[in-house]
Length: 253
Image 1: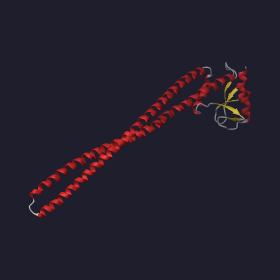
Image 2 (image 1 turned 180 degrees about the horizontal axis):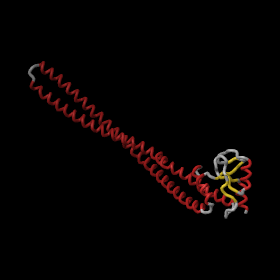
Image 3 (image 1 turned 90 degrees about the vertical axis):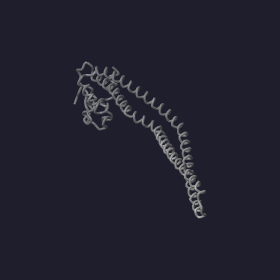
Image 4 (image 1 turned 60 degrees about the horizontal axis):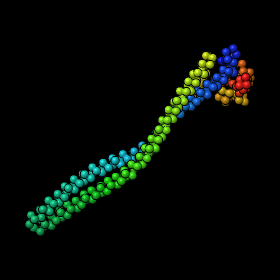
């Protein structure tokens, strides 16, 4: 199928030049759009080390709160046991027989051992709390450093995003200006192909094949394209075909 014949205000080769130039803009725009889609993922990757360290810090803080609560409970139990031990010891003077005295000594020993157990529990919790505090202190500078690295990478990605958007704006302006030079039906056909082929709507013929779909073209189609008096489609991918000699001929004029 042909879409441009001699009779345009511009020659076929000139229209072809416009198409190829327009395609350069569109291919770059599609490339930028792909890059923009990747930016959120790159930001997540940059943030991952910081999030991991922040997660560890939160675990340590939760553990610290739990240890503090356990220590308060253990200290209350220890206080109650110390009071109970003093109460049991105070009853010694009330005992009248040796048997009662021996039994009470045994009760005091049990109470003392129980108190010692609570003391050991409190000391163990204090030690674990100290270890927890030390771990937090060691982690905090790591988080600060990770935050700096992330902030730098975030700023870099934000700058890249702004630059890409600016480039797209400029490309779209140039694209719009160039589109005005193209014949209307040819531009419509190009735009449909562009959207279907991610910007790759115009394909060169090399060694008898369309470089867009890599398939061998019928010899007659190749000959018709070489003649250069009309713009023709690839038989398979429908891209608009051209040969390098068309561009060379136009540049020599």
